[in-house]
Length: 235
Image 1 (spheres, rainbow, N blue to C red):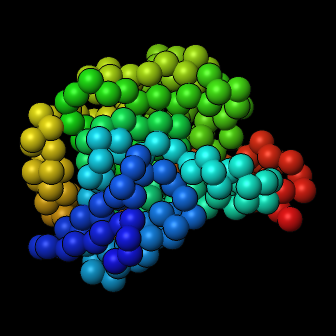
Image 2 (tube, one colour):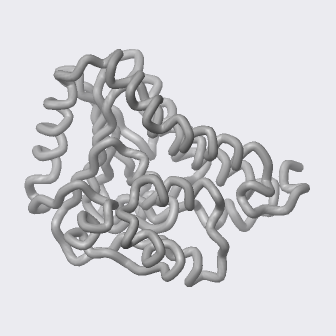
């Protein structure tokens, strides 16, 4: 695998690990490497565990890339939500092992997994666009509306509230929290149970359940306007 992502498969479980040496921002390179790892998981017919080595699971989009201009911003944001849609529709179960903070697109990536295990700790998970003066793109709102507990949706999206791991379970960001030392084993055990499913039934049911969500995401990313970007951002 490449520099930012490692891939390891064992007993039909593929572990995909992000590590850019910093806070795992979603750059064009990171997204491309994640997609390559998912290609390998399909070829290996493996259940996926997506994780990171850093205390920050993912700090969102690469701000340097977003600052390169409207065309670069559109390409990056579109590819990020295409990755989220791919995870949401992945033909095998996707377990996410979250060792630390998730911010903005990092939260949307986390919400795109089928089962999400978080490490106990003092970190937060936050959708902070409003605090930074940004309007959330439509696909982000759709993912959060689908996956967050209704009582926490406005708090997370409109108020930009940060959630501790325990509160993130109540909010629907995580499914459960385990001691940090147990994170990898817990995620792998969850993946091993998921590997017992009938994969054809799993894939078909997942698509039926998320059909409307995926349609809304794909419609929104088809043009810059759907992501809140200038109409001429396609370049």
